[in-house]
Amino acid sequence: MTKLSARQDVTLEYRGIRSDPPVVACAMTEALPAGTKLGNYELIRLLAQGGMADIYLARQIGLDRQVAVKVLNTKRAEDPDSRTLFMDEARLVGMLSHENLASVYEVAVEAGIHYLAMEYVDGADLRELLARAQVMGMAIPYGTALTIVAHTAAGLDYAHRKDVDGRPLRLVHRDVSLSNIMITMEGAVKLIDFGIAISTASQHHTNPGIVRGKASYMAPEQAIGDPCDARTDVFALGVVLYELCTGMRCFPGNSDFERMLAVVRGEFVPPSVHVPEIPAALEQVICTALSLDPAYRFETAGDMIEALEAVAALEGWRIDKRATARLMFEVYPPDDRWEDDTELVAPPTDELEHCIAVPNQETVIITKRRLARGTESDAPEPSDWEDEARTRGRRAIPRWAAA
Image (tube, rainbow, N blue to C red; front, side):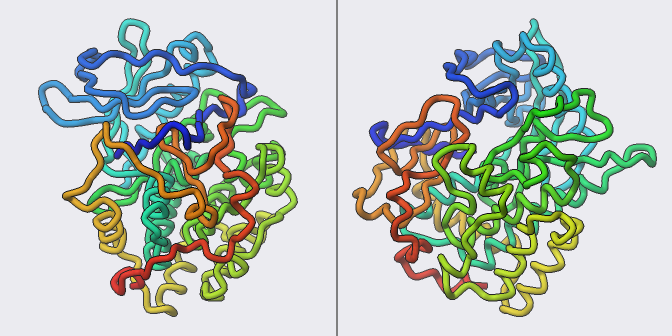
């Protein structure tokens, strides 16, 4: 993962703590030092910290390849439910093998430390990518947005249909979001983090009344604790597509409660209000995926792919990995890829009033306000939404990017 950093005076903290157990203020656990060995893996450096686990770049001893090692943090390791969730994720992802899903190589416990070794995705998640692109005054081309979502949908469709010995897993990711979709420097799309996924193979079952997921991306049935299925992930993909195409939050709000209320009511601004030139067929795909009633959404992620391909054919776009590779090349040019100690210098505040703020655990968010620790919020201040008409950037999109 490419790490972005920026001035602390404009940082919005995002802690990634889920709604189960209830969000509370807490400090990040102390990271394991470089050189720590867990089984056949030697930790190199910390990549990210969340409420459940920490992720490290590591070297696999013997094969001498880079991997990502996800470690259940010490506080969560004391909780049996957290340990079960962690092992469920490893077990589920270990059953999956698809080019658009990050692979798990091994899961183990070393000296009381629960960890899993998985594919290291050398790139950036969509939230980082949007943040960087918008600071540069760029917009994500429609064809590229369709490519990203179609490839993510391909991984989801595979996971939804997966069976073991003829028995369907009925797997639902439940956490599809900008931060859980990564793009490699070569343009490959990878869906990550099955930490709260459910399936028939899960040993942990969510208690009644407990809601898991990110408020801005969960489907209405997920938000009210009803049963989830493949259409729940389709809804979240619709949110991702909305945000890639408009540069605006689909369900903004000042709190998780406000965002969840908007989700449950189906209240969102049509994409064409933000971006009048958006093709009607593309807007229809987004609105279908975001239908309040699951019966009116695409029945499967595969159906959504077919709809996206139809839009691409109509508009003359290509759903092709080359589109995402070109975007990564422009946003992260080879001679200007950020090192861990490189500071992101934010442009003047008045240039940011039309940009969506897209933070991640380690990335600056363009706003002057800090949220309380533990919040799931990644929306900017209300004042940042006053003029939403010009959100897709002030710089011309290269001709190749429209394809």
